[in-house]
Length: 526
Image (cartoon, rainbow, N blue to C red):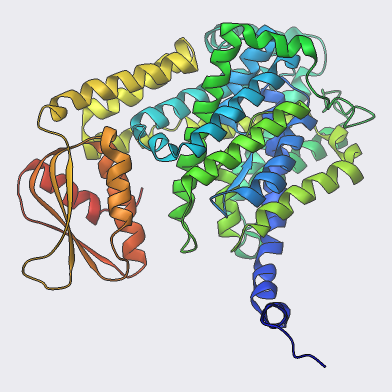
């Protein structure tokens, strides 16, 4: 009898009790169930907020879990429909119809694939945190303004300002309108109250049960017991009947400039949100670091598939990803299994969707939008980097709400460039790898010139090349300026390295750049 080969021995060892696969599965399986419970109401709510049937959001969750989960460069990140894109999709669907969305997503996915192949993933991380958080705050406000109308079983308007102006009319219709408007508001209010109360008061042994699910269950229960005649999720008899390749007429619309611009907007916003989420997930665990270009390519494949089957656009999403890490996931298996659970739910229990009031899903999105719009990030930026950086956040947010998302982001980027111009006059950033002169064997990274978001990819690469586990010195003798984007990135890197046992020291130099860098390294990750 032939002795077992090395591969057979390795597999037997991994699958044996206490082996690597079984140990991983023991943590990934329960984590996948937690993420599934978090994702289920969010996928449906975001789809309704996007102006599309709820099953389209669940299909995106399936693709994000199974396909992107298998290919992702960030193993513990969870992908699916994102609240940040709901406002864009809603406006587009209202203006051009749902059929036009498929080709747009295919092009957006191809752009992401090309960007990953060209290794430009690091450049998306160079977008100023003030712009990113200002964009998300603006999106949060738009979500709240739209979902206030859905809370009364009414339809939202096409723009944020229209929704704001229509709020008094919504209140009047709530009092005098047709249908059970009072019941809808009660259901939405119960959902919000239950979600917030559960997240604040839940017992430790049930800490993994998500507040969004508790809120939907409470709202659905009240609607059922109270026999409220409120709107509920419309479920087609054949859930997958609406999934089909885009028609020839829809592909022909790619010749229109407005359609192509929308594809580029979705590609850029989805990529930035995904990679920033992946960077945040990296700070939550000690496992493998994100391969940003691979993650960008995986997101592209996911959006391409979603476009072909008529689903929603996807991004990496921090709420589901953080739930995944906190539930104990250690590999991509948890993400893949959560997508499998969504698919099984759609196949086996679709009738449960018809019991969910749309006002209950709106309640979840009101809480989600409110949290996105939180001024906490602006206060953090102002406290650490001054009023000018906080003003970029405010200008981005206000323009997103008053005009549109693309104009808001371009405004923020233009203001960030203007903020960087005085620093750029002080010379281009130069990075030198050397050994600390007074401490043999300690690596030293010598920075000179001006460090701005324009040099973030090269600065990130230089920091990641430094050895882990020992002391690393950052020398600032000739550092003339450093902006908040670089400071945030270095602070995150230092926090992660410190958690792994490294010691980061800022040496040499004096003045504002030195002091700001020392403060960023010493501060906990935000």
